Amino acid sequence: SYHGFEVFGCWMHEVIGHGSGQADASLNGVDPSAKIGPTFSALEECRADAVALYQFPDAKLEEIGAVSAADHQDAYKAMLLQYMTRELMANGLVEGDTIHEAHFRGRQLILTYLLDNQKGVQVDEVDGHHFVEITDLAKAREGVGEVLNKLQTIKAMGDQAGAEAFFGQYGTKVNKAWHDDAKARLEALNLPKEKAFVFPKLVPVVEDMNGRQILKDVKVETGESFEDQMLRTEAWGKSRDLDPDAAKK
Image (tube, rainbow, N blue to C red; front, top):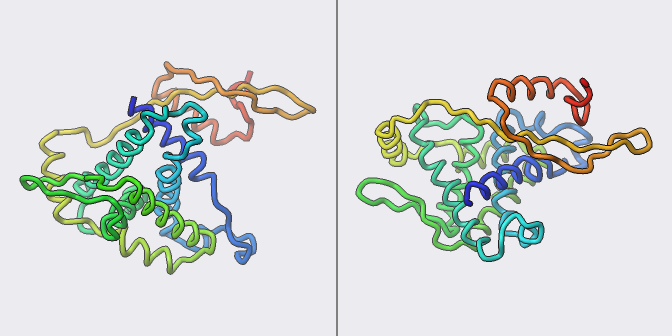
């Protein structure tokens, strides 16, 4: 199902997105976040998104069984549409004309960059409502790659001025037409203001090898309550054990 592809994209964002990229040696060990400052959070979220969006069409996903060859292109198109439509609608959630939240700024940058640079994406207006259209999937991926290259270079060099300029151009300003349309449509739906998610519990399967814990596999468990999930992740944040639950037993 597409939901499965979306979840896999989220994992790619977290694992190979946030988990990738190196600082340039010229920073002499200084964390890029300290050099870049307040824009870093938006940059990092956008960079992780761009990694997932760029890498999803790779044939490696078919090799590991994440998606079939027959579904791959359609799944990628659906992922891009969902990603950019979510941001188009998010404009309606912003008060004022400036986007502050890091994830919103990242998605706005990618959507606006692809639009402004004619990278296979357009926003159509039909009866006063706005819709994202993918006109060229290969060009859209090419544009995402350009964004990723720019963001990784900025992060690696700790380039504060470059980060602020890039987000100032593409990722900060609310689109007034999108805002007015999206706000009216969201209000008509009467959706809840906040949402919470209960994720599957990923349980590591470990074994001892020469005095060290080695990760051999991961089991997926469901049925945990939202409250238990929050308490567990809070406790995990204070532990350095590979399997904190097992360590308590």
